[in-house]
Length: 88
Image 1 (cartoon, helix red, strand yellow):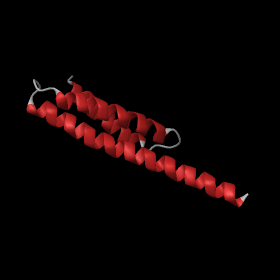
Image 2 (cartoon, rainbow, N blue to C red; image 1 turned 45 degrees about the horizontal axis):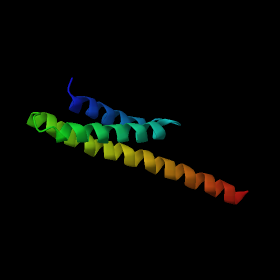
Image 3 (cartoon, helix red, strand yellow; image 1 turned 45 degrees about the vertical axis):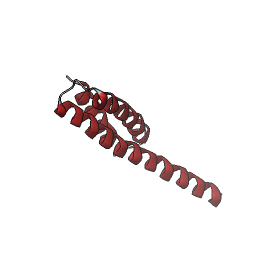
Image 4 (cartoon, rainbow, N blue to C red; image 1 turned 135 degrees about the horizontal axis):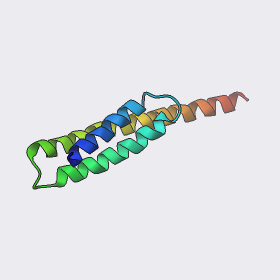
């Protein structure tokens, strides 16, 4: 199992976790950061094949999507909490 495959698994897990209930947004942020880091390492290996480097670049992209979705959910939750606080 190559590093690019592991990075892509983390990236896909981050996107899926962004769709799950309560702790999903935090898991999505963590998996997104892990996918970006592992994807960067996989992409920077000059000795790796082109497919492995492309997989690393894809993991970076999908990891950023998962990170963005998780961060957006956290922002929505914080805005909802502030709205409820203003109502009280």
